[in-house]
Image 1 (cartoon, rainbow, N blue to C red):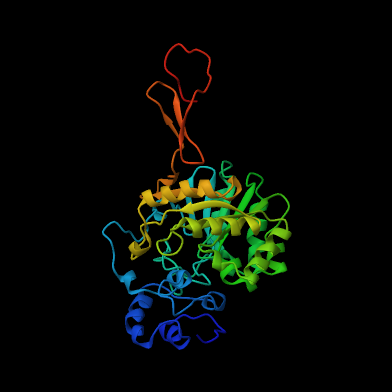
Image 2 (image 1 turned 45 degrees about the vertical axis):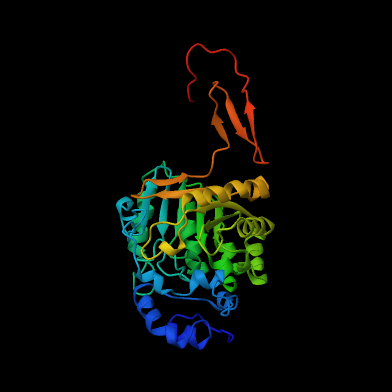
Length: 361
C-alpha cells in the first residue's frame, strides 16, 4: 500500500492508494454518490489491504452492501427530527440538549446512524442566527443542565469557534456541563492541539469529552498523545463504541478495547447496539450476542473497564440499557445471583418482616 498524505474521499483515490482494486471502483462510486467517504492518513495507514477481514477497513472503506437496505431501516433511525424544535438542536431528555454544531467529519464511518445527514453538501451547519436561537432556547429553560455537542464531529471546528461555543453556555448559570462527542483524537490526532484543549475549558462549566473508537488498533502512538493532551489539560474523558459485526464482536477484542481506553485515562461509558441506519445490516448482531459478550466482559475486566450496553429505542424513545441481568427472582421469594465464575447461588437480602408484597422505590 502507498503512503497516504491527505484524506481520501473518492474510490479512485482508494484504488490509487492500494486500499481497493481498480475493478471495484465503479460499484464503490455508486456507494460514494449516496454516502460520504473520507479516510484520514492516520486510518489509511492502519489498513491491511491483504486482509479481507481487516477491522479498520471494514469501518471506513465503502462497501457495496451499503446499497442493500433492510425493511426495518430508517433514514433517521432515532427520530432526531421529531425532537428538534429548531435547526441544530435535539431536546429528547428533560435535563440536556444535543447541539449539532457541524455536519462534517474527518472520517465517515460506514455504520453511522446520521449518514443521511452528514457529509459535504448535506448542510452548511449552524449559522450565527441558528446558534443565537439555540442559546436563547437553553437560557429560557433552567431545567437544562447539560449541553452535548456533536455533529458531524465538532472537533473539526477551529479552537476559536470551540471557545466561543463553550463561553456562550458557560455564561448560562443553570448549564453546568458541556460534553463533546468526537472521533478526532483517534482518527485525526494532529487536530488536538494545546490551543484546542484550552478552548474546551472555561470557568463556570465542567467540560467532558466522549471519544469514539471501536477497535484497539485505532490507538496509535499519535492517538495516545492526543488523548493525553486532553487528559493532561484536566478534561475528563469517557468512551463511546459501537458493537460491530466483524470489528469487535468477540470477547477478546472487546476486552482489549476497553483496557486500552482505561490505560489512556478514558472511562468506558457506552457500548452502542447499532442503530437501524440505511445500508448497515451487515454490521448488526443480534442483541443476544451483545448480551453474551457483556457477560463475558464482566468476567474478564474490572468494573473500571466495563461500559453500559445500550440501545437507542426506535422512534426516538431514548437510550435503554440492554445488558444481561445477574440477579433473578427465585421461586421461594428470594433471589438467585450469577457469580463472576458463571455459576449461581441463592441470595437472601436479609430484610425485616413485611406485611404485604415488596414495593419498588
